[in-house]
Length: 481
Ligand code: BG6
Image (spheres, rainbow, N blue to C red):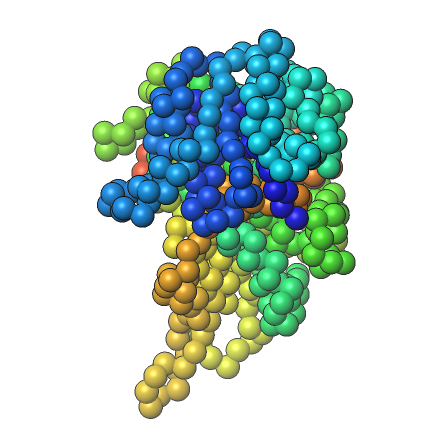
């Protein structure tokens, strides 16, 4: 449940993540009445700033293009909740000052519990220092203290384990909320309902009915300006090992005993443990090259010369359990492609020796973004006096069916969960561990740890990806419908 009298502290408050995601999400929750009563929000960062400057920055990404009066008024009220403390991340004195500031706020609260939610909008090299300093200087008792952290959680299995065990010295699993923001997306959450609240979907969810599954992430822009970070991580760490693997685990896990966080995460871990490490043979790597006036990856000044870092990857995973044995799960993600789209495409098997010609396979598509939708490609009778089958769709497109519904932002949903102490949509330590086990061997190959680095194939900025992609997905039985 939600604690009254909570202070939310945002570290890295002047950075990009905070400006683009954290504060807009906090504002969204505030506006919809989902923040705890009397909540206050404190920013902390190294940049010296007046409170007004901080407030201006914090609201700079809140959407209000039409200058809507109601939104403007809410922004004003939201600013009243904000305050700012300057300090460094490695010096206890800054955290002492923060603690004094927090106690000042809490002195006005009615309960003696002091509840603090610490949000790390920080680069990973300061995670441990900040975790330690908060624990030593800003831990409130009595009260509930929680931290929210976000990837990167290490670069491979060993470094992730080291990071997690360092953090564990100060913060328990119970107090830790590891964000994978895909778990906050409406259509990702919807997968559980689709699977476990429908006898139709639930009944065909296995290797007897499903031929192959693709989970696809496409972005129409490159790494412009972010090349430094990106180059040391690559697309697999950026998107596949976390976001797409999370979607995969929800798609394939067995039904949890209950809807509780631990039951759900137990099942996710179990299915992930059934996936052997991915292999080179099952992997296609690409890197975008300049086209139509758009710069290639290597032309980005923040990217090291001659980098072989993949900006595109397709890789096939296999699940060794009775439900999924032999079904290929293709994860693919790329930057600088032709469109923005994230979707799950479940392709079913052929109808056995049909009585109709020209029929195509059924496909269930869950479009995660943009324009949330679920549609089933299926065959129906062509309208008219002849009896002929044709391919058509059963279509549940959200903005048509639920025209007035507001789809929450992922970060809104997740911050609310953390405020309420619900871990269901956060990554448990053992989930992270097994995710790294699946990807570490291929990452070491790509990094050159185990010999020569593989060269990605080129694909044009704005294209559908490497030319090899069609043959790649066909190899796993995908048929274009
Ligand atoms: C982030 C990646 O985790 O997810 C980015 O680091 C990527 O590279 C982003 O652009 C995609 O998130 P969304 O919500 O826009 O799909």
